[in-house]
Image 1 (cartoon, rainbow, N blue to C red):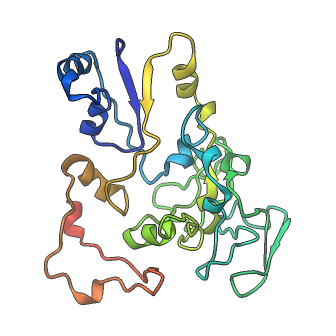
Image 2: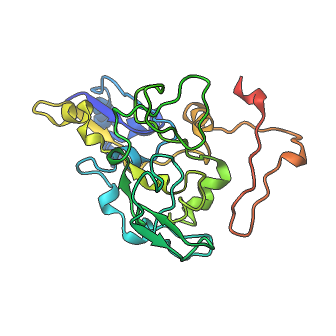
Image 3: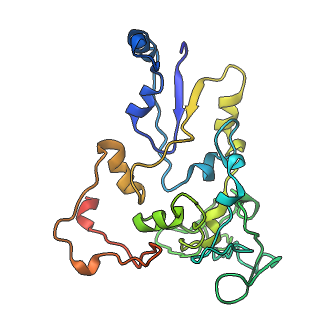
Length: 269
């Protein structure tokens, strides 16, 4: 590798990124060390609480959304029956204000209508970057805010649950089809952003662009939110809570769906 390398990843271990430049054959170790010395910078971009496909799944040449078989994107209820539509609760994605084009009677026990079929969708189509849907400091909106001059600029959505048991439930033994059922944000889990429109994408793909690698097959070190993965990024270890009260333990059903979470504020210091 004769040029500096820029590495773009949602979250990664620096040692992992460096080793990707080494040759596979052990007899070429000296050459590998020489090539490694030509790397000037390793840049780790840690995008909190985002999946790869949510941000980078449409980039050229990546193992992204276009490679996902329908069986891995079609969302199912807890019993395994596919939804016809995606139920939404972000106030900018519900019907109304959006037209109710899809009608579902298959899973949730009662009919519901939605604008969204059971498929990934572009968030920016409905909540553009220039929408004023971001809350002012101190304002909590569980399911987002409608555009208003009183809000901060930016196309903000509601938050999406990112916890230990919920993530494993959503993965569903590798089927990856219970994201909607296992989330407090429901169908928003199937939304993505077109980041190929960002200046960074144009910069990395223009003539004379720097070499870069994108870790499209990297997975987080630990189930849970970004705080735990911050610790795994640095230490590859999980803090423990010896003697935690039993009342704080999560209880999961036969499908692995939890009823709550356990936290200890002392680990946020």
